[in-house]
Image 1: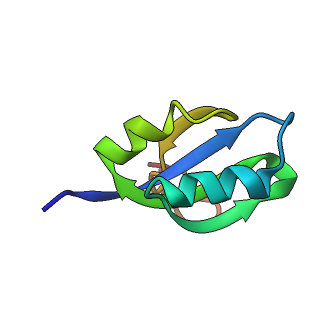
Image 2: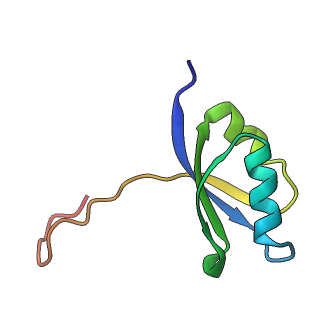
Length: 79
């Protein structure tokens, strides 16, 4: 069974984000959020699918969506 991971997909501004989201979904990305204001789409897929999605027209980058712990307010420890 393939390992499903979370991804952030950065898209170009020369195409409709909704159209790119539809293409990504058809190619296997489970869409979580379409962040129109910043030109990103988040979703989940296995690594092989994410590699394939990099070749879709309008996709600029695909990066793992990692959790960042900033620590509590006023803390010197981050990460």
